[in-house]
Image 1 (cartoon, rainbow, N blue to C red):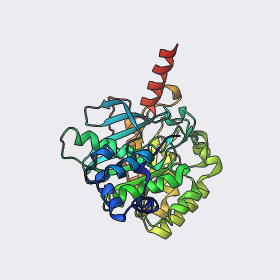
Image 2: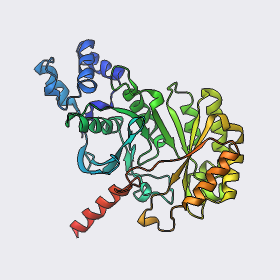
Image 3: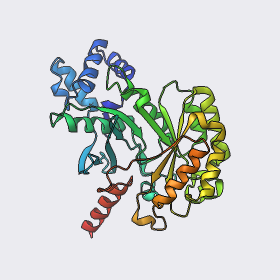
Image 4: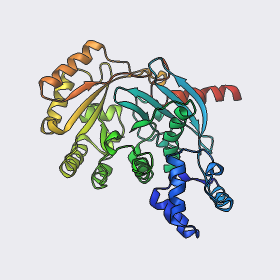
Amino acid sequence: MEKQSIYGLTSEELVAWFLENGEKKFRATQVWEWLYEKRVAAFSDMTNLSKDLINKLEENFVINPLKQMVVQEAKDGTVKYLFELPDKNMIETVLMRQEYGLSVCVTTQVGCNIGCTFCASGLLKKQRDLTAGEIVAQIMLVQHYFDERGLDERVSHVVVMGIGEPFDNYNNVMNFLRIINDAKGLAIGARHITVSTSGLANKIKEFAENGLQVNLAISLHAPNNEVRTSIMRINRSFPIEKLMEAVDEYIEKTNRRITFEYIMLNGVNDRPEHAKQLAELLKNKKKLSYVNLIPYNAVSEHDQYSRSDKADVLKFYDILKKNGVNCVIRKEHGTDIDAACGQLRSKQMKKQKETVK
């Protein structure tokens, strides 16, 4: 049985573990500081702890559960990491340099069962959920990447948009958010964190009740049920009517803006009539909605799709703007490396199969 990553404990859970194991509360505070302020990689580096306590920690926990397998650096500063989990499964994490800071995109599951027909993430069906510790470790290893190079840079923003459906791993993702948001830890502001869901309406309603000021994004990708069901299997369970009902409830309870992600697929969802339908769908949410038009990164296994022409994207954008919808065309990152989510992992798995042959 694999030891639990200590990164998976919230500060309250860490204190509870220390008290249950006959240790003083302030020791838990010291360990928390070593993990997130001094960012040590081994319990033995926690120099103000006794040997007995270090041994106890080593018997029960690991710090980092991930092994770095591949690092790809793009010309624009984007860095894509392939990590191996203790069970030999692999996940991807991406660092993006933005004008407003360093943003990390984390993965929440090994594989994905949502069934989006254009996405590389779903090429491997869901094997398991990641633990909170495995998700936190992605942030920590990216931060260590800077620390080890002597760079005075800090992860300032997090997007939960990597492989998997975050709300299908709800409890672990919520603990992850609490850990990275902790003011005495990484202190990544809630408004600097965005969680993206493919549209699990029941979980959107639950998310509205959690009290965290974390941003919500929804992978919409189509303005009507016919198109959305054809490209996103999740729409069979949560059609647009149910999804928008949950969105309305979320907005009413939180008064927070929602971002709608919209990948532009040539000839599929990028026609002027689609833009008009999208504007109509969001007409009562204009003040608290924002559309992110995303250029499609081609995936060889999904060759039925291609990127929308720039002229079509601009026409789509103009229709939304003229109808009062806040929108932007997303700036691309890492186009000279395996840009699509899940692509690097898929390529690595192919290499391993060929090696075995």
